[in-house]
Length: 203
Image (cartoon, rainbow, N blue to C red):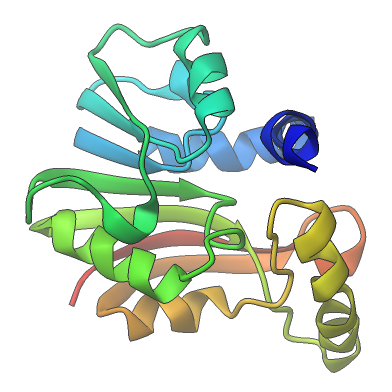
């Protein structure tokens, strides 16, 4: 079980995230980042090559040591990258110390997502932004029923992934003000493919 959790599972999740259909979402979210950026759940570093100025520094947070090791060898942009092996539920950074927080398909797996969002708000400067793309709770009742039914299995086999988290309300409940959000299904199985993409500022 230890080998599965530490080696096999991170690699399976990484393969899922390499889906080419996800790249336009990544490009839009990463393209809006600026200044000192904290990326939550850097994983194997798939987003790193997409960063450009006006980003000045990337703080790459990831709790899984195996993924941190892979990310260190990923192509890096021409700016400083600092890897932080830590949980989003206890971010080891000072208050109001980053300009942008980025999450890409991360909130579904964090056990205490509300705590993590509170930490993101804490480290953001008052004029900073949270940029996100996440999958989550769908608006259609039939799809929601499938999401509720499938989530226990998804949590076991997909690194703790919840299919049924209400992303927008979670972000707003943590004290953020949503400034832009786009939602909709991407191609694929509907319980896994309802996307939330947007930005929010500390309220």
